[in-house]
Image 1 (tube, helix red, strand yellow):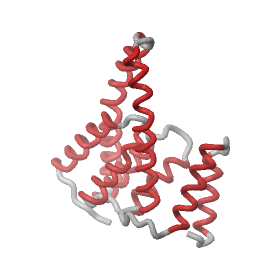
Image 2 (cartoon, rainbow, N blue to C red):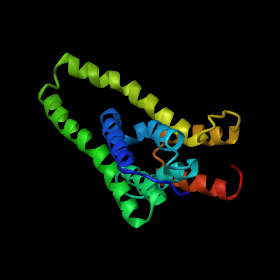
Image 3 (tube, rainbow, N blue to C red):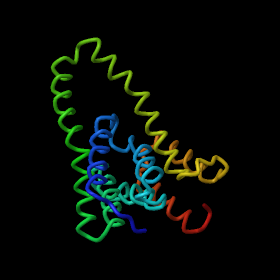
Image 4 (cartoon, rainbow, N blue to C red):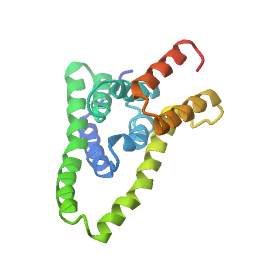
Length: 190
C-alpha cells in the first residue's frame, strides 16, 4: 500500500491524536474504534489487516499498552514512504496521544488525591467505570469484525466471548489466549 501525505495531513494526524488523547479514559486502547474510523475508513492510510495486526503485535509484546499507537503511526508512515516517514509517523502519533493525557492525568491525579474524600470525586470514579467498559467492548467489536461489522461469523464471536470470560473469571495470562488464538487461526478454524 502506498499513500501520499502532505504537511496538512501530518498536522491533521497529530491534531487527531491530540484530541483522542483527551478521550482516552481507561487507556489509549479505548480510542481504537475512532482510530480505525479515522485511519482506515475515513483517510484510508491503513488497511484493516494493518490496523488489526498493529494492535495484536503491540498487545503481544512486553511493555506499555500504548505501544500500539506507535505501531499505527509507524505503519502510516511506512505506507507514505520509507523509514524516515515511518519514524515521523511514530513520533507524531506518540506525541499526540501522550502530551495532553499525561499532563491532564498528572494534574487530575494530584487534585483527586488531595480531594479523594469529596462525594463528587467518588461519584465521578464510579460513574466512569461503565463508560470504560463500553469503550473496551467497542474496541473488541472493531478488532473482531474489522470494517464489515458482520455478526454472521459466529466462530470469531465464540472465541471472543470465551476469551472475555476467561480474562474476567480466571488469572490466565493474556499471552496464553493470544497463543491459543494464533494456533486456532493457523489451523484454519477461523
